[in-house]
Length: 453
Image (spheres, helix red, strand yellow):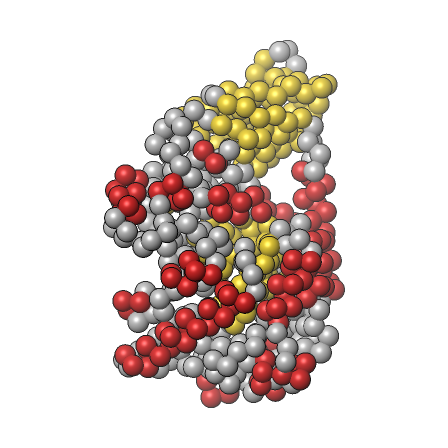
């Protein structure tokens, strides 16, 4: 059901989403100037992170070519033995890229449990790694905190090769048809996330791959557990408002325009400027030339910098976060060639956007920045202060060129958290951002111009 913001807040007040949720929490309070949805403080902080490292590590790393649906050839837990596993090395790769958060597949399609658990006998306790006493999740979270990176955890609810569950989260290899067995699986999922969300401290992001089957359809009842143990974590494809949405593809790019608001919870894609639910987009993607999990054949010689920068412009530069995947190998290390790719990516972002020619902030329909001296520029970054919502609906960016006349450099529709645009190199003395359509008086957090070359 599509609802207006007023109707949505009424549902919250009536307890439709349970205790602990309020219009003020979801929208950050009433916006000044216009009926514009606003993010929660947690969503606002998450959008500032911009770049994350996704880390896929699961049993197919130790049995390349195996997939979770090959139930009769499931790898034995004895195969899991990453003798040189180093989560600090993973964080060095993340820092080289400039990632501010990282998400680990605590349990992926195989159902293998990479933390100390008695839920069922298929996990690190049954493996030879660290004598069966290892806890990858703990090591990962500790390394994240050591390196100043927000930890995130992924637990697959819709697929479990060990328990023979398949999309969309039904037993009997996805066919369902056994309510008692389905209920047992739902309770297993609830115990799984209780362990993951209660043992390792506050998490930055919780990842639901493909969403979660509702309790009414036989899925786990995760909302009370989430509220109890991780009330401030951002949930990807969350079962309740206050999270973030999938952008609709695994190419690391968003369409344009791209809005932070949607009319329907977890509606993938470009969003809707008239939506009442704040749900910014996250673009997930493997490193170019690679899959989601390591294989011996993955291309070690690919030079993906140009592709990565294109993704950056079309994700972070289009009001989304970019979650770029990493593939630790069977040693437990991210291959050095890939570590170099992440470092090259981070250096190039800093080279292009680390030193603006000029920048400012301001409010109103026109915001102007003067350069110290006339200079040739070719990029602009605009950021709204989205704590007050997305207010810009259309704009033009102009430069004061020789002859003291204003010339259009570029234009657009949505801005949101961040908009990056490239244009023909032009010598200017001033640059101004001029809105041509707004939902409320614009609040520009940053207007910055660059000479990238």
